[in-house]
Structures are given as C-alpha cells and as structure tokens.
Length: 259
Length: 272
Image (cartoon, rainbow over all chains, first blue to last red; front, side, top):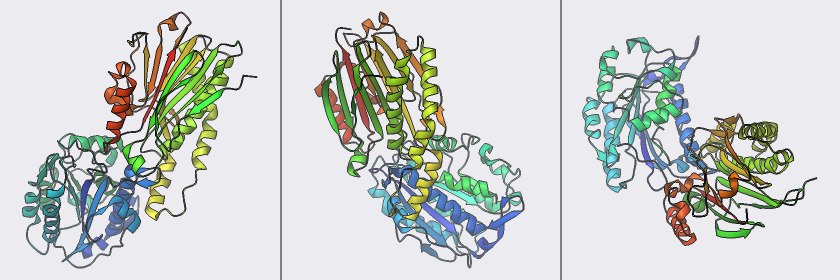
C-alpha cells in the first residue's frame, strides 16, 4: 500500500484546497522571534516551495518530466480553480503561480465537493500503477458557510486506486496554543498528531478525524527531508501558526515516492 | 613522465550498444544506455564511465577506470558524474601509479586525499555551469536551490598496475570479481549503500571502501564487472549472461517508464 512511485507513466495527482477567507489576512504567523507574517503570505510561500520541490524531484538536467499532476483551488464563499484544471508539473512550471488575496467567508464543503467531483472524473482513467491521489487542504478557521465538510471528506477517503485510498492532509493555520495541548519548538523532531486528545479545539478535532494516517512510504520521504520525529501512525494533520510547521505541512504534500 | 594513455569514455548523450575493445592483454566490453525518460527528453544520462589504458613505465599493461552514477535529485547529476569520473581516472593513472600503495588502507587514503585536492576544481565546474536563459522562473529557482547542495555521484574505480589490482568504491555502484568460470574469484561481499556519495559541495560522504590484490592473489581474477544500479535487478545472473541476453535485458528495461541509466564495463584478463 502507498508504495507506487510517481513517474511519467504514473504521475502522482495532488489536489490543493487553499482557504482564502478574510481571516487569512491576519498577521500572526511566527517567522522568527518577534517577526510575524500574514497567514496567506506564509501559505503562498509554502505552496510555492512545494511546487519547487516537485520540480526538483521531476527534473533531470533542465527538463521536467511530468511526474506530478496538480490541481489547486482557492476557496472563500466560492471556489476558484487556480490552474484551470489539472496540470502536469512542467505545465505548472511554465504557468507560474497565481497570486492570492484573502476575502469573504469560508465554505470548506464547497472546496471538498469540487475535489470530489475532480476525483470522480480522474480515478477511472488512472492506471493501476498510479500512486494514490492526495488532497492537501489548508484552512485557518471554522466553516461559516455550507455544510460540514467532513461528510464529503469521508466519502473521498473511501475512494481508492490499487495503491490505496485517496489521502487527505489537513493544515489548520491558527495560533498553536489555541489548537494543541503541547506546542512543538522544533518541527524536525516533532512526532506528529496521533490522537484527538492532543487537540484542544473542536474544529481541529474534526479536521483530525478527516485526516488520513501517514503512510510509511511518506514517512520515509519526510525522514529524507530531515523530519525525523514523525511517528508511525501519525495523522496527516498539522495545527499551529509556526512558519516552520506550515513549511513542513506543505512538504508532506510532495512526499509521494518518486522514480 | 608517464606514457600518454589511450582514453575511452561514455557519451552521455546517446546509447552505446554492448561492444568490445582490445586493451592489450585485457579485453573490455562496454555498454551505455540512458533511462527511457532521458531518451524521450533528449537529455544526458546521469551515468558516466572513463577508461585510460596503455603501458606503465616498466612496459606492463596499465588500466585505470571509473564508473560513476550521478545522484538524480542533485544538481545536474550527469555533470557531477563526469567531473568525478575524470578526476578519479587521472588520480589513478598519475598520482596512485607514481607510488603504488601497499595496502588497501593506504590506497583509500590516497584516493581520499586526491579527491580532496581536486575538490575545489570540481566544485568550480559545477558552479560555472551555465543554465540557459529561457528557463521559467520556477525552474530557475528550483535548479538554483539544488545547485547550493551541489552535484553528487557514486562510483567504483579500479587500477591495474604491474599485475596488481586496486579497487575503490563509494555508494551503490557495483563491482564483481570473477574467475575463469564466471564464479566469484575472491571472498568479497559488496553491500550497496545508497547514502554514501561524493558531493561537489561537501566532498566524500560516507565510507570509501577499497581492495587491492597482489600479483599472486589476482591470478584467479579473470573477469571484472563494474556496473551502475540500473542493472541491479539482474545482478545475480549478470556474470552468466551472454552478450545477446544482456542486450535483450537492456532493451526491455529501456521500455519501462521507471528505467534507470545503465552503464557497464567488463574487463577480461588474458595471460595474467
């Protein structure tokens, strides 16, 4: 399970769902001691880092092999397709990344419905050797429009390919002390979240319940990236407003084994 | 002054089918095939080998070789492989041959010291590599960050001098030493190590291993195989494979989207 490698014939499908509601303009992400940045700016940088890493993992010489296929949706009260459909990593490299601005409300269900629709269209055409698709969802707050997104998320987690069920990763960007019992000081050694008891926020707990268990192959890739603390069985869930934690969270979206 | 050697090296931009060359009392077979991805994208392969051959000052056959496998996620692995391969061959042909070491430990020391002396020039070779100006911004950034970590490669190298064999290796590149029946000639186990490699930024990472064989000990060695991990799947049967069978294996692997570059050297000693 979750051992299929991303390559030209079997590219990995990664879907980003990015909350761009008004609260993402809050400047409370700790970058260094005393220095904070806006949530949306930190998320954009982390998203760009993920794309750059995928380019590096796909490049031989200066040519990019289409090892990844990427879709990205920004959501507020509505959902915007940032790339105009699923694009290969070389196409994304040529397109460049869109700018994002924070505004209005949060309809997380709409974003997951969009992802579900895309997966239903994509899954029948994925080859048997394809890695399981991954959804990387980033939000900074509770839903204030639409219905409970976990209903859709749990449907998505039942969708599968021979490599395994579709994976969902959740990143909850908000002051760490309001989300977790124990705030980590060194993300490279962080063990990850393995139990809802480690969370103190009801919505964080709900996101935890709709986060996949981290596959061992992904944990191995994270180890190669220097994140040596993640324990087996940790969930693909991040909660906090530490810049390094957000960077780690987006790095996880690139952790599909490659060949 | 050393006699000027003949040189043969792989062309990283195209496939070289299995072929044979006469190096005096040593016959060499060589093969080079890029991964399917590299072929489709008209890109250089990340493997590289070089062989220098001729006569020593005493008139005896002399061969130096290096076979290198560039690390895929490093900056221009093909460049690192070539820089390292050229440096190793030159080191073996000149420095090591000038005062041949008497033990494997001394040979290791000479290789490590020699590579350290060449480190700055190899690093400069990577730093000076020019990226084309038409690359998209994201690609330029991706490669720029990769360059900071340097270009990396693994290797196996060898020197035949005055009937003695010297071998050194680092990483996941393979070496087999066989007798006249194509069975292992010596009690030698190589453990592939994917973590060890040479870096243009950091130098040697991991443990460089070596073996030397005196004239008496090397009498049993008839065949020397050096190959990259692109052939790892057939490693156990490679020594018994005919040329046609090996060619068929290469052709089949080239069709796989997950195929790796393949480089292969096979030295057969006559009248050792």
